Image (cartoon, rainbow, N blue to C red; front, side):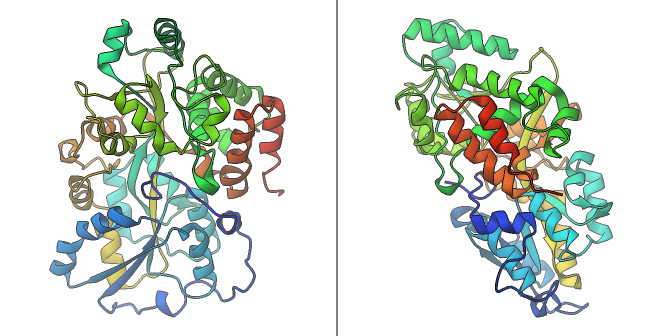
Length: 439
């Protein structure tokens, strides 16, 4: 498993935190002694986030030289319970100087409760120069700009074997109907299910299925409806959302099409999402749907990723050929302190200089327009950066990360699991919709 950028494991505590529920045993107001280091700064800046293990080491390496040059000690603390703990720490007066927040909904909740400080002018200038308006909007709450984007992931890739496609006489599809036709052809030629999928992810089981649905809502109904859906102006029970589920179901709920090498359709829920990389790398599964980070899993499974490699990927195609609409994830950097050293760190993290340094270390990408795609360490990350930087690309953040936690990390995930297990779509959609907080 990779960092919080790549997976969303959110506990019930985190769901409460995202929804803005005051947790028992927490007291105190915004900030606290750790967040009030003084206007001049004391040479130390604390950063808290869910990025852990090897990626945390890369994160610390990305600013090591800058720390030395600027005489600032950045102390990073990783936690796999970040989403729950950040609100607890903020309410308890033990907030870090900076937090790396992977959910816009959680970010907005912290800002709306006056825990976060508005971003410095230099940070906003960097975002205006290097990021799109869509990205800036995710760091803006009630018309106040609070934080810059950091890294990103691009979702909606279909991973496949170029050699196998050539063997079967099929080409990369240009439309979703073409994708269904390719699926049918492969099934007829091989006599096996072309697709494999794994939705298993501990308490977050189901999230890869939400990515599928989000891709189809955006492609079928467009960005305006997608935005209305995220805001619950278009509810889950709307026919347009049911249409997206039905389109995904043509693949995932068809026992002739899924779940190659693992079992029947219901096995999708029990297969860990990363385990799907092995049959893709070995060529025993024709296709799977997963985000840009999946190339690391393919490599770990012994496959070479590239246009001429064992495995390559194409973006889930649109309903009509032409245009590029994509979903993705990422993080937003928010500050609980506004001392001088913290502001310097915030400015650096929002710069093209930092983006190029971090991406060159490997494994991640950014939508920062000042990033040179050639600094990315893999072909799929280079391709992803070009898509994100393309001014004609329509980008929308992962819907389940923007919705209230009771829905996005609650009933939506659970609903997907129930749907895969055979519950009728209409019942699933009604159940998911019930998670929306009452006004």
